[in-house]
Amino acid sequence: MASEYNQSSTTYGKSKNHVSTLMLKQGFIPDTFLSPPPNKTPVLPISRISLSPPPSPNNSVRTGPTRPSPTLLEMMSDEQTNESKLALENRKRAQERVSRVLETAPFRNPGEWGGFGDVKLTVEARDGFRVSMDVHRQVLVGRSRFFADKLSRSGGGGAVSVEICDCDDVEVYVEAVVMMYCEDLKRRLMGEDVSKVLGLLKVSAAIMFDAGVMSCLEYLEAVPWSAEEEGKVVSHLSQLELDDSVTDVLKRVSAEPSTSSRADDIFSGLLTGVLQAKDDKGRREMKTLISRLLREDSSDHVNYGNRLDISKDALYNLCHRCLSSLVLCLSEATCMDESRQDRGVLMGAIAREADNMQWIVDILIAKKCGDEFVKLWGDQKELALLHLKIPVMYRHEISRITAQLCIAIGRGHILVHKDARYSLLSTWLEALYEDFGWMRAGRSLDKKLVEDGLSHTILTLPLPQQQAILLNWFDRFLNKGDDCPNIQKAFEVWWRRTFIRQYVAESHLQITICDYPN
Image 1 (cartoon, rainbow, N blue to C red):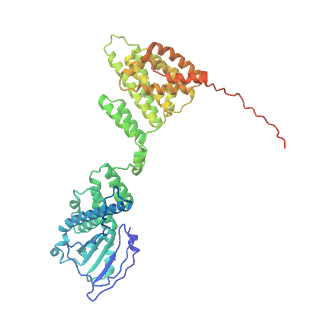
Image 2: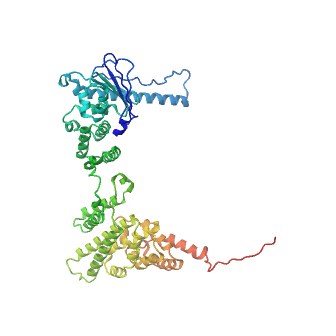
Image 3: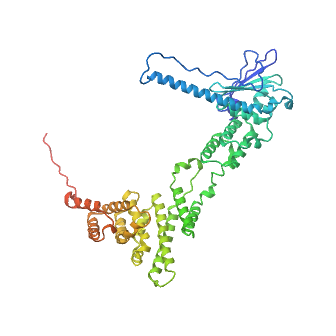
């Protein structure tokens, strides 16, 4: 940023009273330039604030009958008037804030600094709002490398007038100047909001006020941030390019490369902890939390470096562990004597493992990598047989996994070969039929969602397989009614495809070539 200031040109002039005028433009504003004043500039009182009058609005007076609705010209005039009023109110509030800052400014005590200031510093905003202060050359030169460089060219004696134009926020510039007089900058910043400190940091960096920069960074490193403030901090620090001095501030939002490379270990540990949790309430809450975090849009993390993520392999390792636990629990339950006192504990473990599997499947579907699980679940012939030997009140949570997959396939969230889809239904559809009554009566289940997903999945199969499944369903529905999924819409589609709109696939393509007469 210092290179910006070095490009400025400098011209000096000295009146008979040896008064030099130094015009500076700096910061986030146009390039610096220096020019002599045309006449002698009187020294203004320290606390005086000069304001340029705002542009007067066009308040034309209209006479005549009242119109039912304003014309476009009148609407534009009213809007201009409102904007002018708002500008005046903002100007008034800014003037009040600056006045409060100047009331306690250290440079108002001339005795402490050996007299009144020898530099008249004027700060001007883009809208013409101006503030003038009498400050001391020794403070500016001692605290700011920028002012040290520029004021050294004006010579050693005489008063100097410095003007900073087109600045973003006059109040922040005045506050930065006041900070140069303070020995305990940490105490000065205490209690300020993050946005204010970010503004002070920007000005301090612009005028190379190193102590101010470090104090602002130390404040930002120690103070808590809201979500909105966090985004502002990261954005401002990345724009200022303060090299390694911002490292401590950003440590709370950035991860070391070694941490990023261990994403699988971190997430596997978290997921395993949830799956093995002993407290049911804590397990439910953490499942909800982690699921929400994993589903968050990656665009929210653009400014935070590489996003930690869990690999497909790590998720499928957890799937296999859940499947092994489920098979073990069902095998033990089928061999158990009903008189055993721990039977209820084992049945609870079955429901728990089924719930764990549902959670992992949800994550797989959300991450668009559930295709392999469809094949894996369709191959669980042994588990499906064990499932039918367990009382339905304990096993119906397992059928929810099949329902999850059918819903995802029906929505197009899982794309898998027709053989895998047919294997899924061949292995688990009977169990789903048997458990549907309990599923429907249990905890939150969208009956229509399951029926639609099942219908769409069946209709993706070849027509002979559709027919076999739907004819079987037809007989079952006549006997079970509401305890069986209602997939009449799928039955109607199959009927029309089979008996009304018959599409015959050609076995080969025939091409006829004939000559046309000239």
